[in-house]
Image 1 (cartoon, helix red, strand yellow):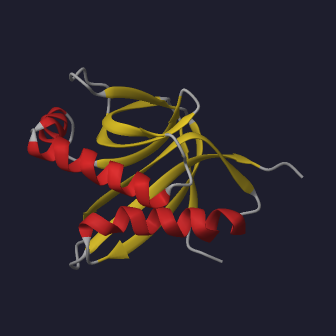
Image 2 (cartoon, helix red, strand yellow):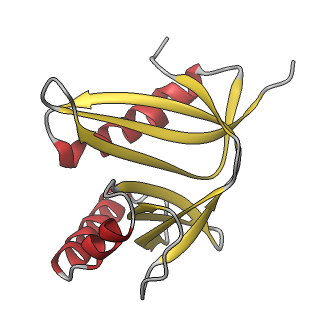
Length: 159
């Protein structure tokens, strides 16, 4: 069984992010290219730095459903009004938390996401992912390298 835990968030919270919508959720290469282009754009124009300065400095990669379409972005915890950014609602409740470690900060969030949707969610039988979104953060680890976690809102499966 993979390494995960269940943590309970007591209050609804918001995240503010810049991102892109996907026409076809299964176009992995196209969506990765769109996401990388958006990340480069908001890094170069200073919008991501502006958000990070308003919040606690921790960047998140966020997957969400907006108007029935898949959406991926980069942002921060909290509600901030920055031109072009969206404010996303995350609900109180139980969250599946999946940790990961690696040496490449820029790839670790995608590696954790791949592990989660490539198998871990299928292994978890007592909770189911209910969304509408999830978020992943990556930070420097105390012993070198990087540490990250993906948080996915879930409901206990009755049975």
